[in-house]
Image (cartoon, rainbow, N blue to C red; front, side, top):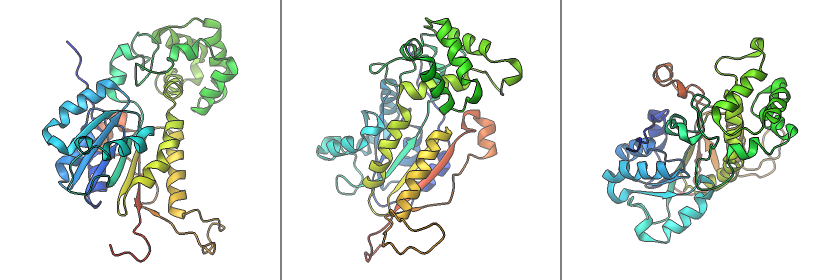
Length: 327
């Protein structure tokens, strides 16, 4: 019997509140997963339809099943969020594939991205995401495409592996871990990789949790090209939303959050080149605003209930009305 694709979404109340003021139209949930955020949004906001995207075929199947109760207000497609511009264009050109919302076809009132890996991907040992379970070293969010973690581990040089680990915060131990991995090749399973990394990290240097945690996270990000996908998607998302529409992102990794923060700040500045702290004289016209300053975090109660929410960071940007337009 197939294991259910179930996932507790993070910061649901905050997501629902963020999209309450947007105009009638469609929210694109670029990481629809099991449909948790999508279901909450559709249940709370009758003026919205939803187009869900996900790279994981199992997630697509789960979301379609969960969102079926909303009828033609919800459509789900198998696609990465980096392709959201193309997916919106294709769906809007075909009435049967565009969600019903009461607004003209093609009106996008929001984009939601809940980044990182989902609980089912971690908990299903065969996917190879977790150092806690023995499995083939895979880590692909779409098991039908791309290179596996085993291919990277067994082909990358010491310098390439070390750079990957440094970028994920592994610091001065990155080279030591990379050399240990190369010396232990071939490595084909998650438990073998976890053991090699653990043996390479001296006991005094071990952080809270398993010493392989950051290495597995770095490999997952590389396998799925996550940062490049996000960097490509953010300008498209900001450009897609209608005036009054919002782009909301939940990130779990400092590299992700830096990209979101920079993209939102640039959009809110409108390309202004004036020195920080001085009035703008370059004529830049911002097209977006930050709905709140900084990143919001989950409540202590939510973290207590769901420890995977602890690293979540939530940011929201809103597209402004054109100058001189009536709201």
